[in-house]
Image (tube, rainbow, N blue to C red; front, side):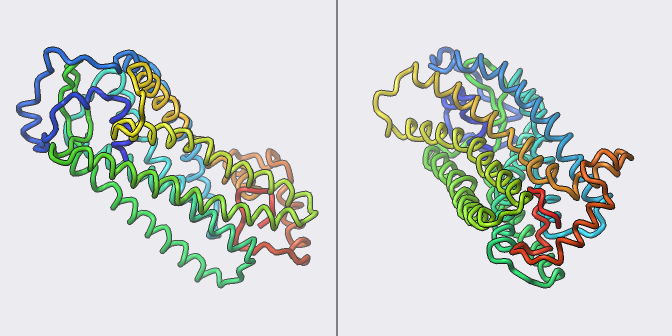
Length: 374
């Protein structure tokens, strides 16, 4: 999947002969730049070298601060963690590790890859693992909310937490599997036009387009289409359930649910559409593609990539910072309980009173994305 994110933004790579898959050979005797290799993408490359480092830097700073704060609060200030808390911890950890790869890509985009072959493989691998796990965890959270709110599932808390841990383990295992091509195909080589070192995927010459297309199709299906379908179905059912309630807090929760669905598609739909178009152009499935269209597509990829990466900055906010328990613990971290809109004592009293009234939401769900009391 890292191939999808970075090879397009540095399409000088397409001018290189394929078949360079020996890491030691590349380091000892890197390929020389071609004498003349005209490309339509030179203008978009200049845009990339300015735009992408800025985006990567902002994503790193904001994502590190937000997800780091979530992890600190959930690990240090939350004694009894619900299934929602466990999912949120894994989501924050995945996003945090994801943003830690941004400085490497920022330097590589602004100048060239100066970190060697080993880090090229490891950074690509880490990037893909945590990007995939983050998106898959969003789908798992939507399923957990669907079961807790729509189905009003009443299961033993111990069993639910065990099931959550198993699910998170399966997500990480699948993400590791999806990232294996990064360890095999990631290499450092010299671009023919600029002479810069690039960290990219280099496929066997005999099947380069087959590998490239297959991995992109895998990304579109497993990291967008399937999670997107799951998220839409689960949250549409959640919206139907909450819309039947007349409680003011449930109505507020409804708005947060809509925001979650919208955020996912605002982040990832444009990027997947643009990269799908790029894939079709590579397969000559798009007619009337010219140099100007390729330049515009290169800029579109960079812009939509930045929008997609921003998911790790504000989606965790929707899942954590609007929750009452999280704000309560945040106030404890700041040493100022008065910062929470509702005092802790009255909140707990209200929680005890509300627990005596029947409602379809399982108490263990915690519905951290909303103002529904846990």
